[in-house]
Length: 148
Image (cartoon, rainbow, N blue to C red; front, side, top):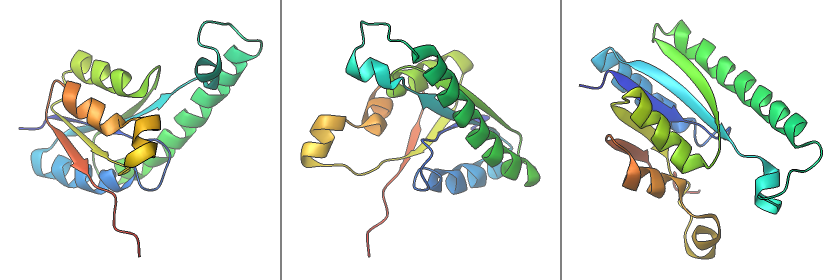
């Protein structure tokens, strides 16, 4: 049913909670798991229409950090016998995830939602909600755990 599962990660421990769910599903369905991290240039937030000095070096460093992060997780997943790959994408987070899922024929996206509400949600938006609305496949959203 789910031959290819996509797991977007943002580097937080909370986002990694989705891995447990994705791995269980991948073992049930003998699925491939692809980890994705989307990097966004901090310069696009400040001045999207300007090319700033050092922007390329900054993006290169961000991509390298993202690759190291994903490779570490991928190594642990592969030890469990799961067919796993990873990719670093660049651009707006939600649309990059959706575009990749469509292009690669992803069968399921498993991700967490940070549970923002009120002003935070208005300011930052919800990547999970945008993915859910636009994804070409089912999306399994894992909610933020209750705080103690």
